[in-house]
Amino acid sequence: MKSYQTYARSSVSMSTDERFRKTLQQLFAQNQIDYIIETGTWLGTGSTKTIATTVEGKHQPKAYYTIEGNLTFHTIARFNLRKWDFVKPLWGDTVAKEQALKFIQQDEALHHHEDYPDVFIDTLDNPVQFYTDEVEGKLGKNPIINAVDWFGDTFLNRKEDLLRTLLIRVQDTRPLVLLDSAGGIGWLEYQTVRDTLGNRPYWLILDDIHHLKHFRSLADVQKRNDFRVIDYSLTDGWMVAEHVAV
Image 1: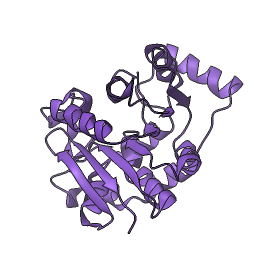
Image 2: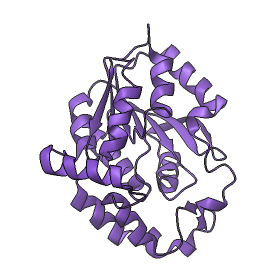
Image 3: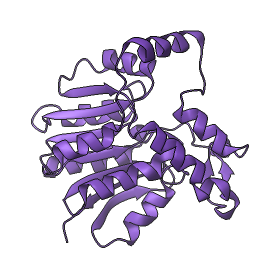
């Protein structure tokens, strides 16, 4: 693999890509989607805001659930997204933490990243430890974020396995699922969606399809006859697809 820091467009969000915006507009114009599940809210100003702006009004869903694992970012996102009452920011883990840590420790793509020369990765320096630290919330901390995390872990109920829980709740409604969470568990999140929803119809958006996060997810979608790729961009790293019952 190669370092994501060398990627000239590494700071470009898929939400700023005009082709992605047009694909979204067409998707929502042609289909009534009542439930959206997103992993990775961050500050709510990227894909969450883009989708909320696109669907508000006549295409407005019943609920747009967006999951963020960092309590500071979640709190800021709640403020940034307050305009849209159908957007439901949730704080917690998309998958169970122990499951995520075990997945990272056993991921052959991390242990043999040199076998994938065209795929980006956040670091080539002990990536297993890097993504372990990411899941455990040890990356990029400052005193304020540390204090907020301590408060949340001490006094609040941090939920786990939120992705599967939400998928089961809306599984028969043909939901839209957008996966853009922690880099080391993208493939795990995709498998969670695929296995939980099974043969049911749904829409799927992947971010970072040229990255460790979802290069395997993209390959799996492309080879399966129960997925129809609507559009994708390797340059900007996103894909929109439809899963159909077969």
